[in-house]
Length: 256
Image (cartoon, rainbow, N blue to C red):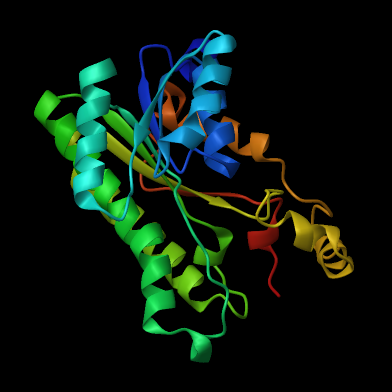
């Protein structure tokens, strides 16, 4: 397999939740590998520095305002992106939230907050993107960011685990439904990665002790998600469809 099969030159990639964390790093990685990148988030002002960084490194990027829980916002974001750079043919469904609570403490507001972003948001973006690809008669790749907590569970994460498990089943279903349109749909299931959201916990004594129980004895670096996503987005992953790829340092392989 040649390195050219991993190239994203000529691809137009949209990344949701790109203003920070995983989405921020993935956007830079896809741009570095040749994609024209559309970075999407609810607050477009937070995307300006990212776009400037990508352009300074020789890449191509535009910011788009998008609230994945609002179908009108999703549709408008795709329309704006298409007008500026063309039909999106790589979608990274990364936007996500958490509200850690035990099941008996999860009220409707908390449940809906998590499900609306983590599941409905993935549905909205995937559906609008797929419709536009079908209309344009173009192949594409949709990559949904699930979690190892969509494959297994931990206490106090009922809504999050349910939402990420639903993303995995949606991924498999879409792969079957969209295959005839030459649209591949796969999921990445990250384990524990160092981000600004969990930084304080993993710097605490409890967090450091938890890391030492992991098979890898370390957290993942967000940059380590870029390679698997490039594989699924590029021709290198042309026959990978309906797969759920754990990127977790073997956490999902351990029975606890």
